Image (cartoon, rainbow, N blue to C red; front, side):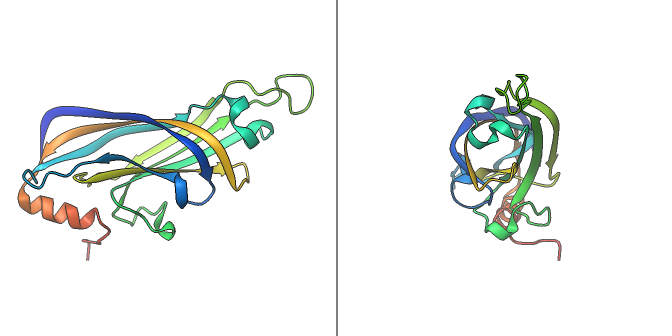
Length: 184
């Protein structure tokens, strides 16, 4: 694997209902690439960020809880729900979790008007041995408050570095990116 010196940034937003499970509308394909004539072109994630776009007072049920937790991950294939948030799953290549204070006590009354979302803590993990050659999905769920679904808008940046790989590496990484465990 050799870097080409070229970089790419994927940016966008996710609008709609975010469920507390990983199924349904929580997964969004943010990159699709298919070029059977050039199997040596691939990308590596160097960094990524996900954060709320919605103002705190538009976040629906989050308004009066005071805190918000989001968990997200990047995948190279469609995932069964039971395989989410598992570092042992080859299709999961990056993980993140952010916690925010909605500061819902702006007024002197309990559950006052929310103020802008303030990040409290963010953690991001990227699997060091990964290649993206066909597809990249972003999945996100709220971890707090205890709600079944919420209307939210999220922004994301995914920073990619282009690499050149051999045809043999392409075969191995394509198998790996579709869920095969190559460590055995």
